[in-house]
Length: 453
Ligand code: MLT
Ligand code: ZN
Image 1 (cartoon, protein in one colour):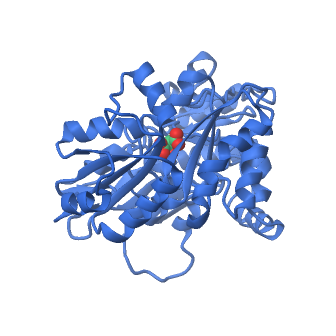
Image 2: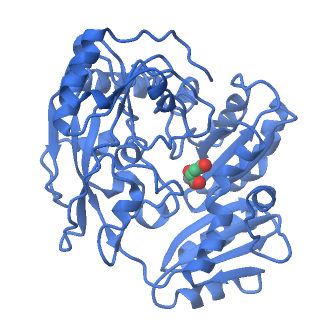
């Protein structure tokens, strides 16, 4: 999707004012700004009016005050690893990059918490303290940042154990569009003193406030994890084994699904080693840690063909089969990344029916499906043959809505799904969203083309 409106460069006086706030080197225009206009998938391309790279919360506040006064719309951007086109300026907005807010405090071992700037990568949070880890574990963790992960309420590979980004939030610092700084970073586990706005900002896609820092929960680093990949005949067998794993393996961290087609592309194009000597139609990756984890997994899988890894190198080899799946569709074309969830008892219908549903809309399209089976979540990556004019979203999202599901499990609505939000949310809910939004951002400058106004 290309830019949908003409970009008007901000007046020179405004650019000079930004430069006074954050330094000339951090106000980018023209070619220097272009890279901030393209998303990771390459499906969304816009032209930023300017890119602003503030270096502190105070500079974010001053920059937003200038934008609000000038009526300049702003798209906040973190590591730019989003998959729904919500972090790139498709309508000539300015990009507010939080990358320079990369300060990471010392972890508090008693509270198992750390305070991180919005621009800190999730990998740095995970490595913050000896014996500690971060509960949100996503493939893009080396580039995805705290602010962006909060804005999309990122999920990932360990949600079944630790929950999504929202569940890691113990406090937040953010700037409203009028430059007001709101800060609640004490990290109290119990704190019933009114509205939980950190929770509201999780999943708000940059529409309510600009997150500048967060107080995050850390978790004990899982001891001696064991990773297993089982080869199975179909999605029903995957679901059944994952359900049993959740009941019978107390140390379970992950239950991830992928198929043979995606694996074959990864083997051919990226040199990824298949887990089993004999290919299976579908695979379930299970990871568990703690006392008895290996025995629990062995008892669970029984005589199903399985590859098991305990060393870091072997585990990484097995994980590559799943973690590199986001790249598969990119090897075949430009992907539409549809990320959906249904109630647990409907996951098999979703996983078995979705390719047919896409084929009815576009018989030549390629569908690569993988995802977080324990969360009822399936990533449906579509490489269209017919024009990407919304027919693929129509087909998949209507199917999902019919199953009582959500059109966005963890990637957000962004530009990719905006039109279809009413499939998941009622008119009353959408009207409430708009009222909340006006309360936070009366100037209407924060990511105005994402989520209802
Ligand atoms: C994943 O689960 O791998 C991520 O959500 C990224 C993706 O869906 O491509
Ligand atoms: Zn995912």
